[in-house]
Structure formats: C-alpha cells, structure tokens
Amino acid sequence: MNTFKLPKTVLAPVALAVLAASPLAQADTEFKFGGYVKADLMVSDYSNGAPGDSDLSRQFYVPGTIYGDDDRASTVTDFQARETRFNFTSTSDLDGHKLKFFLELDFFTHSDGNQRVSNSYSPRLRHATVTFDNWTAGQTWSTFQNPGALPEALDFVGAAEGTPFVRQGLIRYTAGGFQVAIENPKATFTNSSGGRVESDSSYIPDFVARYNFKAGDSSFSIAGLLRQLEIDEDGFDESETGYGVSFAGVVPVFNRDMLKFMLNYGDGAGRYIALNFVNGATLGDSGGASTISSVSGFVSYQHWWSDRWRSNITASAFEADNPSLLDGTAANETSYSGNINLLYSPVKPLTIGAEYLYAKNERANGTDGELNRFMLSFKYAL
Image (cartoon, rainbow, N blue to C red; front, side):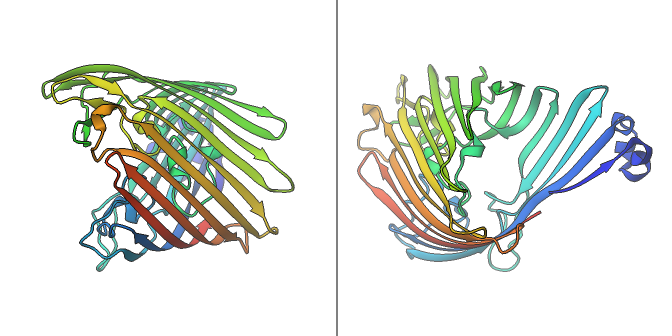
C-alpha cells in the first residue's frame, strides 16, 4: 500500500480544492492508496452442465450456484481480472480525535459486461466507511464475521460454507477487543416450493457483538448475532427471532506455519453464513414461519516450504436442519468443499499460484451438484 503524508503547511495547495477547503486542511492528514491486480484462469467442470457466462458461479465459488444447466457443456474455461480492487484511505488527527475515511471498489458480481469483445465490467462498492475515534459507520464487513481468520486461497472466499461472509451497512462501536453494532436487517425466507422470498419490511436492526482476544501468539474471536425476521407484505404477516454464534481462531504451529479454523451455529442466521446458502426461516403458503437451524465450519492449514513457496489446504462444510415444510423441495440443505494450492512469491508484491477446488451441494429433494475447478492466478499487490 502506497502512503504519503501531507502536513498542514502543504495540504491546501496540493489536495483537491474541496479537500483544501475542508477542516482536514487544518490537520495532519495521511493518505493511502492500495489494492491489487489479480488475473485468473479457471477451468471448471460442473456435474450438471455449466451455468451461463454471467452466472455468479463462473466468477467464484458460491454454495448453491453450482447445480448448472443440463443443456450446456459440463466443462468451461474462464479468464478474468474481476477480483482486481483498489482502495483509498484518509486518516486525520483533528484536535486529538482520529478521523478515518475508507473506500474500496472491485469488479465482481456484475453481469453488465461480456467476454466477446471488451470484458467491460462496472466497478462495485465493497467498503465505504467513516470512523471517528471508536465509532464506525458505513458499509463494511459484518461484525459477525472475522476476515482475519479466512484462509489464503485463490478462490475469492476460500472456505465459503464455513464462514460468515457479509458486507453491509452498520453502525459499530469498538472498545479494545470488544465490538458491538447494529446492522442492516434484511430477512430472507424459503417458501413451500424451496424458492427464496426476500422481505422488504424488516425494520428492527440486527444486533451483533464480537470479542477479539489473544492467547500467546494465537488470536481468537467469538461473535453473537440476534435478529428479528420480519415479513409484512403480499398477504404475509410473520415474525421470528433468529440468532447465531461464531468462534474463530488463528494459531501459529511452528516456524511460519499457521492453523486457521471457524465453527458456527445458527437458528435463523440465514444469509449471514455460507453466502445465504439457506434462508433465515420457512414461509408457509397460508402463513406460518419456522426458523432454519444450521451448523458449519472450516479448518485450514498453511505450510511454508521456503521463504517464497507456501501451500494451503482447506476443508469447509455446512449442514442445515430444514423444517418438514421443505421435504422433497429444491431447498438447499448440505454443502461442503475442499481446496489445496501452491503459491510462489518471487518478490513480495507478486504471487503466482495454482489451486484445485472440489465442491458438492445437496438439496432437500436429494438432487445434487458437483464442481471441480482448477485455477491459475497472478496477483500484484500495491
């Protein structure tokens, strides 16, 4: 990440006009530009036929998206640079108060480009936050998630089933290792045919707390989630309470080797875990709602072969206990995956790597989908 610091004697003539006119002109302000460029080659084999070019599964592994299309070929090759990202940070000291602004963009999830000519994909907002002393507001990782415990992988997430993975709007207070937040309350339900129903009527913010702590050189976190699943639209008027707990750890083993793990349990946690593989609750045709419980987790081991070579092996799993309403439907139920990679960094900013990923998803009606994927990646970090 490139850094430069502008003292107040030179800030006004150098910064943008609007910045020069702001209170930041009266403070020592540090700017940082960062991010990376990442190029991926992916050869994917889908047991049920590959999804279309614009499908999310063709960009990175998301549980529930690999069932495919029987009318299409099973093996496809994709070249992309969509994980490439850039960010900007501004940190100021104002009368003894720390003020920080962070913005980050990348190019994932959009289907507005094409692979025929230009591969022109729009930037998307990842993070946008303002922090004033202990308070943070904006869009960023949910407090329920511990990004520092994620394994090193070429796939975008790396342990998709076994981790909370949510970016959203929130207001968070941090005191030492303790964090507490109110966050976006979006609720999702599964109807009697196994389809997803998104509620637009949630109004009570989700409440999340996390405690980060250390034991020697190891670091751990424990997080709790409490939420109200509300729907008051299209003839439905239902409300259920959901919750979740998550425990994560990063443990040095010997030399530079590292063990990472996470274990989660939820009853109505829904979209917070495994990229919304299952929803928070079921929704009967004539009303009535029941929360969906789940258990998930991952374990990952990183081994350094030398100062420039390293490997990561990861296993991840998710299992839902669906209510009887979903028996025989296409509702998601079980998912697991594993990946192994070999990474080489000839110089610190550059990483070249190869990775193999296997995943299997199963539905309540007994159907399943499998994915075998080989990746080759080149990454240059600023």
